[in-house]
Length: 276
Image (cartoon, rainbow, N blue to C red; front, side, top):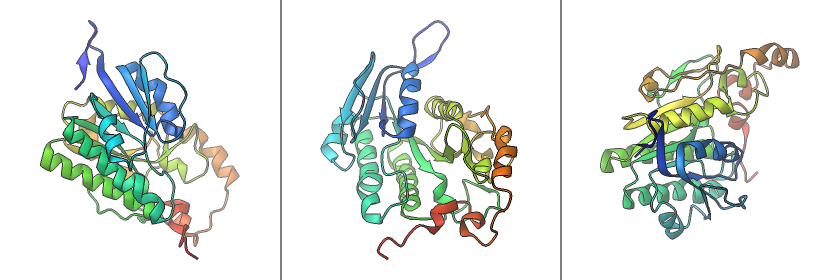
C-alpha cells in the first residue's frame, strides 16, 4: 500500500507495476507514474526502451502464467493496461485480455497485492444509444469481442474483491488522445493529464472495493454519469469544449442512420464478422 516518504505526506508506493507499457497509453503513463513510486516495473510483450533510473523492465506475455506470477512479485499495486486494445476476432482477444487478466489477478492473490487499476473500456457499454446518459450500475452492453473481454475483466475484479479482498478500480477509458478527433469524442475524450489524475486517484483512494468509473474529462457533452464513483476522488480538469467548434465545422452533418452515430461505441459496433 502507499507509504508517505516525505514531510509533505506525498503519497508514494515502493514498487508499482505498469503492464502494457509499450502501448500508446503505457508510453504516456510510464514517466508520469515514476513520480509516485520508488521503483516502477514496466512490462509488455513488445520491445520496451531501456530501464531508466528507478525502473525495472520485464518482457512478459500475459498468457504465460509463470511469467505473470513472477512479474507481480514484490509489487504494491498494479496499473493493468496490457492486452489487445482494439476490436479483433475472439481468438486474438482471448489470450491476453481474458486468460492474461485472470493470470494478473491470480498473481495478485498469491503475492498479496491489494490494489489493481484495471483498464476497462467504454466499449463495455457501447450498444447504449448516444441519446442516453448511463452510469456504471446499468447492465453492460458490449459492442464487440474487445468489449466482452473488458466486461469479463470487470467481473473478474468483482469476484477477486468479493472472494479475496483485492480492491480494483475498473476504468472504462473513453477516448484518450492529445485532443478529440471527431464529434463523438466531444463526449468520450480523456486528456492525458486527466488520465494521470484518474489513475493516481484510483491508486490512492483509501477504500474502493470494486469501483467502476468512466474515464473521461470534464466534457459538457457526456453520455456517462460518474456520480457513483465520486468516492474515488477523481476530479477532471480538462474539457473537450475548446475543440468543439473546429470538430463541428469538420463534421457539419452526421448520418443519423449510421450505427456509429446511433450507438455510443461508434465504429466498434460495425466491425466484424471477421470470418466473412
